[in-house]
Length: 160
Image (cartoon, rainbow, N blue to C red; front, side, top):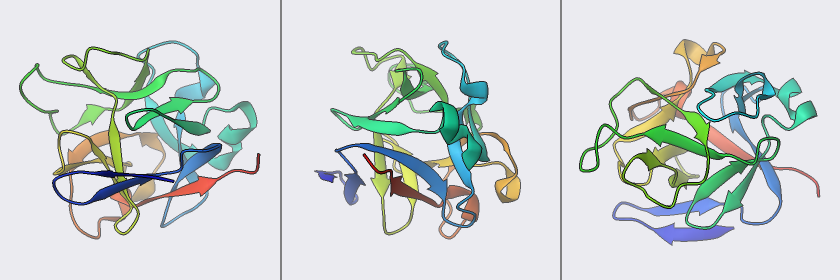
């Protein structure tokens, strides 16, 4: 596990092996690449754990808090409004090529095990959010609300 310091708390990701990002409320719901696709720009969705069969819901840690999808090799990403501002609420979480220029894409994520919230690295007040009441659908960035079940995740290590 790696711990990185932020202004608010410590981010905690598993740095060895692969893992699922599962709902704390319903562990059968995980974050996965839509339809297991391999192309950039594809939405990250909340779906059942059967997506692990093709690797669409399996993630690994990459340097600087980047998360890489096992099947596609692409990074969990969200598009910025512009180089100096954050992400608009409702922005879809997608997969993109690993980007070394952070002005257009945000690919660094902080995970706080105590709350289960996953924040874009630059915006501690925004979280990855599942659809209403964990309905399957596209994961988006929304303002964090303490105790909101759609924003509470757990990182589940997979056997090597």
